[in-house]
Amino acid sequence: MEFSYKEQERRELSQSFKKRLLGNETKIVFSELMKNELPDFLRKYLTTYARRIFINEKPIQVSENKRFNLKSNKKFQESQKQIEDVIVESIILNQDEIEDAIFKAIGLQFDLYIEPRQTILRIFYKKKQERSQQDILNAIRNLSDTRPFINRLIEILESYSNRRLSRELFAEILLRTEREIYCPNDARNVILDVNRVMKYIEKLRGEACSGIKNGLVIAMLKQRGLSDLAKQFTRDPDNADSDASISSAELELKLNAYIEQLKKDVIHDSPPREPFTDVMPDFELRNSVQSNRLGPGGFESRTPSVSKAGNIDQLDLKANTVFSGHESTEPTKQELPETENENFRVRPGRARDVTKHFDDPMDMVIHRADIESQPDGPIPELKNLIDSKSAKMFKKKIFQRDNIAYADFFDRLELTDTWKEAKIIIEEELRLRGIEPFSREAIHLSDLVFSRYFPKKHI
Image (cartoon, rainbow, N blue to C red; front, side, top):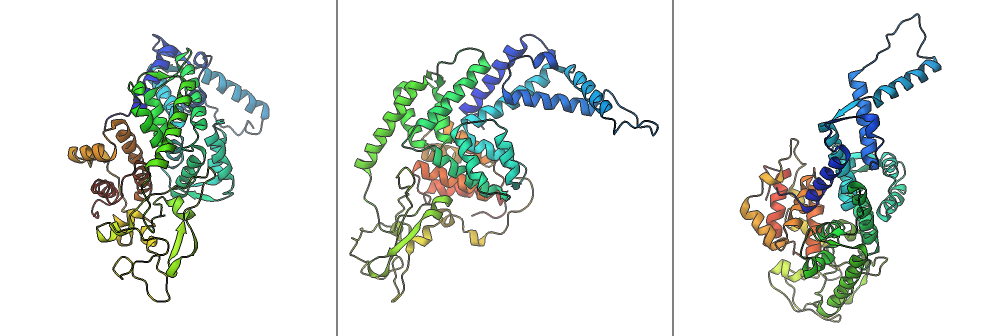
C-alpha cells in the first residue's frame, strides 16, 4: 500500500534529524549522544535501550558468596548502581541502532501530534484487548503533553476510577474526547496543535519553522474528524501544492473563513428533512438520542441531543427509501400515512417507532445476529484483500480520488484487531463523507473488510 503523506513526512524528519545528530559518524558513545538536545521521547527511548544492553550483555557480575552479605549492604548497593551508570554511559551505539531509535521515537511523537486518537489507541491496545484505567492514566500523564485533547482525555479517564477498560470502550472514550475538543465551528484547538507540530519540526531540523506543509494540515484535519474543513482547504487553489507551507496565522484566517462558508452552505443548501430520520449511525450519538413524547396518532418522535456548541449532529437517512426502494412524500406534522404498508404499519393502541431499524445502519449490511464469535488465528493484511478494481472504486466513489485520504483510512483499518473496531472506523468515515451506508460502494467496502476477520463467513 502506498505511503501516506504523513508517513513520508515522518521519514523525512527522522532522516533529517539523524543527519544533523550524527553527521558522518558511524558510531557514538551514549554519554556524548545524551549531551545533544533531544526530543523527550527519543531521550527516554535511548536511555531504556542502553539499560537493556547492560542487562542483556552483563558486562559485570557479582558472584554470590555466603561469606559476604552484599544484598542488604546499602553502601554496596549504591556503589554498584554508580558503577552500572558509568558502564551504561560508556556504551557505544552504532549507526543502525541510533537510526532505529530515531525512527521509532520521533515517529511515535510525530504521530501523537498528527493523529492523537488513533495513536493513543494503538499504543495501549496493539497487543491487548483490556487494560487498567490507572495504568493508562499514569502513562498518559507521563507524556507531559498539555494539549487540550490530552487534558480532556485525562479528565474523562478519571471518571472511570479503578475499572478495566476494553479496547472498544477506550475507543469510544477517545472518539468522545476528539469530538468535544475539535469542533467543526471552532478552529482554535486545531491551531494550537499546528503550533505544537511546528515547534517539534523546528526542534528536529534545528532551524526556525515559519509554517507547516499543506499536506500535513490536510492530514491533521481529517484525523480530527474535520473532513469538511479538509475538503475546503484542498479545494483552495492556494493550497494545491502539498509541499508548500502555510503560516499558523494565515491558516487560522483560512479555517475561520471556511467555517463561515460552511455555515452559509448549510443554511442555504440543506435539503428538507424526511420523516423519522433523526437517527445517527454513530455508536456514541445513538446513545444520546432521547425519546421526547408521542406525536399525533401515537407515533413516537425522537430528537438528537444537542452538543455544547449547539449543533445537532444528523445523518439524513430516508426511511421509506431504504425499506421500499423509492422515495415517499414527506407528511406534515398533522398527517399520518394513509395506508398500512410494509413501511408504516400501526397497530391499534401501539406506537411503532420505525427509527429503531436504523439504530445501526451497518446492521443492514451485515446481520450481526447471524455472526458467531470472531475466529482465532492471524488476521490477513488488507492490502492482500483489496484488488485493483475495488481500490479504484473506493478511491473514486468514497474518497473522491483523494489518494492521501484513501491511504490514511486503510492505514487505520490495518491496525484494528476486531471487526467491531473496524466497523466504527468505517461508519465514521462514511458519515463524515456523506456516503449512504446502503450504497454499492459502502456495502462492498464493508463486505471486504468484514472478510478480513471472518474469512470463511462473509456476506
